[in-house]
Image (cartoon, rainbow, N blue to C red):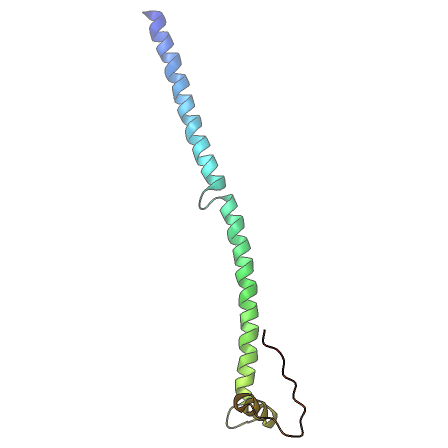
Length: 105
């Protein structure tokens, strides 16, 4: 009887240590590979860098478009810009000009 109680105590202790080790392992693995883990953080940092670069490109594109729009405003019409837009929209070319038609991409 005494040996059985002693064996039960030893097995209970081992079971508790094994259970604690399993919990630590579970949370450790999730801390590394989980949705908010170390790997996910690296991927989010890469996505942030990509989106920041795209934002900078789009801001530059927007600034260029704003500059072109400013040249077409009625109070400060740039004659060259107006001429370029009219020729583009109406497919107009002066008879004295040389026009080169490029193949469609």
